[in-house]
Image 1 (cartoon, rainbow, N blue to C red):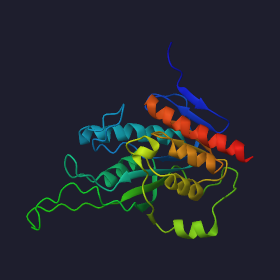
Image 2: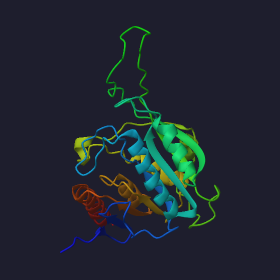
Image 3: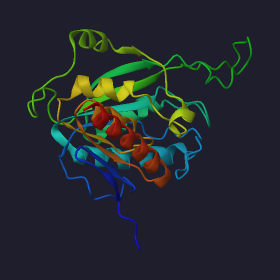
Image 4: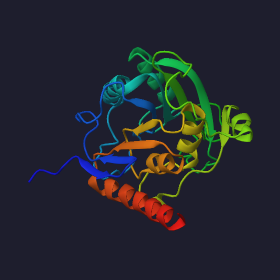
Amino acid sequence: MKAQPVFFQSDRLTIINEDMLKTHLIKRCSIDLVITSPPYNVDIQYSSHNDGLSYDEYLKFSKSWLSRCYRWLAITGRFCLNIPLDKNRGGQQSIGADLTTIAKKSGFKYHTTIVWNEGNISRRTAWGSWMNPSAPYVITPVELIVVFYKGQWKKTTGTKVSDITREEFISWTNGLWSFTGESKKKVNHPAPFPLELPKRCMKLFSFVGDTILDPFMGSGSTLVAAYRNSRYGIGIEFDKGYCKTAKNRLLYELRNKNLSD
């Protein structure tokens, strides 16, 4: 019997266990905000994804999935793309600039770039020429959250209900965000991002009740943040093991909510 692609569903949350390049379960122009962190192509050991493509193959893959997200996004929708500034494994590449260019060619309009300083300098893998200008390597320990939109920047649809506080708005409209990353062991995923990232994106760029999509759901952080902040959350994830991890996290949230009511 063929497995059903809807892996989990509650009143506000949906997990789709399917290839995001093949799924037909997302309606065109139905998503208010996409928040995602795609594979970085730096040989991370995912269970069901080859993270060691050639760079040309990786850019071709990026074009395909970005085009799908553009079709799914509502005309007043926004898109928060978490990617590295650059990469040095397998050769120096300007991944942030390259994916931004591909997104714009896919139809997205550029709004801004937030720099996320996660305080992690342990990623240094090589200095090149040690204490010598012959061939030094510079590694910048930050990631980007590139913000795009589809039709117009001013959001005129949705509930118009904002849940961002004055202090949050002042702090988060400063485009340098500093908070720590997420533990791999804690959420059972090789490259999770912390709840703080999707929480800030959805409170700053969406209304209460909007529909949030993460096409590379992983451990489900975006859906957890959507649930906690009264949004609808949809996650697409090819790997069934990560779907199970995300489902367990969501069930924990639902149980705690019921206990507190």
